[in-house]
Length: 206
Image 1: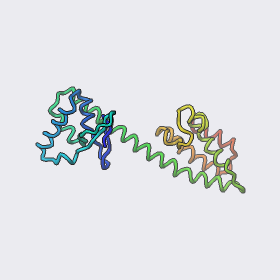
Image 2: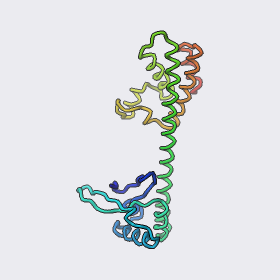
Image 3: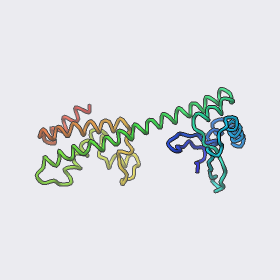
Image 4: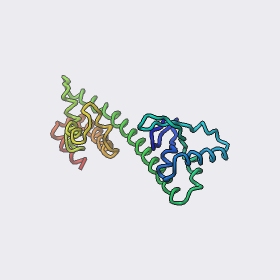
């Protein structure tokens, strides 16, 4: 099922729907469908391979195409320069967002991985572990990087309290958190007290 006016990912391949092409070019969807059918026919490509469906707001279901980048660009080669530019700009936007997402996911995973050494250092630094020993360290880093506690940041940005905060942070913010976690791990292992670590981490961030 294709969302109306959408660009989607099918089998890890970026695709642009005929609905999106129609919207960007100002053409009627049935005309775009006709152009795609003719294009795929001339390329000897099995048209149903790119077939999809979408539902209208009224719940009616209709057919559409989901084209990979190559076939999309071949299709619009017959369109005028202005329309081609709109499609190409949209593809570049899609690819940029996909790259940003991959970068975010990678740094998000790194921040999670780097949290473990810090918790190990915290555990080793206390004879009797309390839950607040871990929350205090996370809160320290959040306050330095985000300017406030996680709960306040979520409230300010309309993030559900049950959601993971790091899923909503930018790559830059996550990078800073990773750096703070690494540094804090070293400071804990070196035996620095909380206030000294706070000062050093703040200076490092600044």
